[in-house]
Image (cartoon, rainbow, N blue to C red; front, side):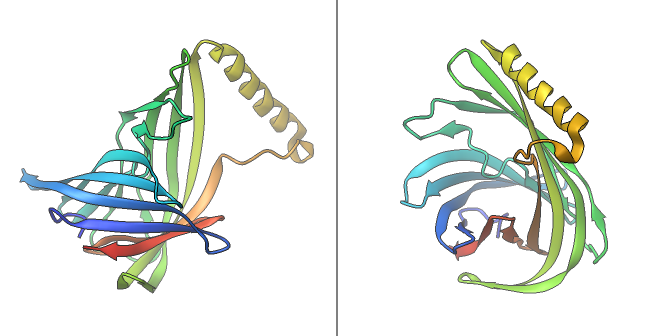
Length: 227
């Protein structure tokens, strides 16, 4: 489905109260094959709970030798549509999460890393690095959503992100962030509790199709429409 031209895939996110918070609509605009690699160019649009367009992203899916490669920058906006946010985004390091053909329960899948640069139009630029690690095929499950039912591999993984800044006032911000890291390391369990930059998630992946469901600590995002 993710590799078929003119197909549209809709995924909806819900919070722990089962209230809708976000919707992603991805449209496969073009599919080409060269030297054994099939590439799908996709436009992913993000909408808030009120149906307002808040982001638009160009992403790529690839398939080579039965290995499905999904762009890590899915849901990472290249341009914000929010009135109070004046930021532009540029992908510095495009990376893919690989889903090999013939995966088995217990397999450890490849890690992936991406970098996105954010120009805040205030003289400062931030670079966010995201690492996906510890990808383990934990089991097999049948997943049913409003869009249908699929036999899926259940894959757990960790996401770690960090941001550094450059430009006006960047040295002050970076120094403060570094100082806080040192304080937390020195104090150990007595350090003030801060939001973690590492999270654990689970994705349900259907071979030959793609991602059906993603779940984190505070949300679940699942396939809700196909056309």
